[in-house]
Length: 131
Image (spheres, rainbow, N blue to C red):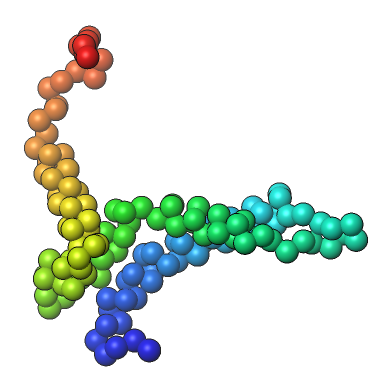
């Protein structure tokens, strides 16, 4: 059961994180069944080993980037009553600093892009870097 008033927050996360994860997992399963699934002597398919299933989940989750999660969390708080930085997620002991750092990094990157400082640097300069 979803607590009252939380649908707008949780639905965004479901769409932005769970759906891509499930799509990635389905691709892993399809790849396994089409290319690596084993048959026994009678020609019946052999049950997948637990380690194989864990690998599917691991690979699927690794395709979900930190910025994807940060963007999903950010989007779920846009136009809401409170700032994301005031949210329980942003204040979470473990995840809060990671998410806020990623968001700040993206903001800084965007500001640098908007400055246009590198417009006068030729693409094929002959600069040599000595380490």
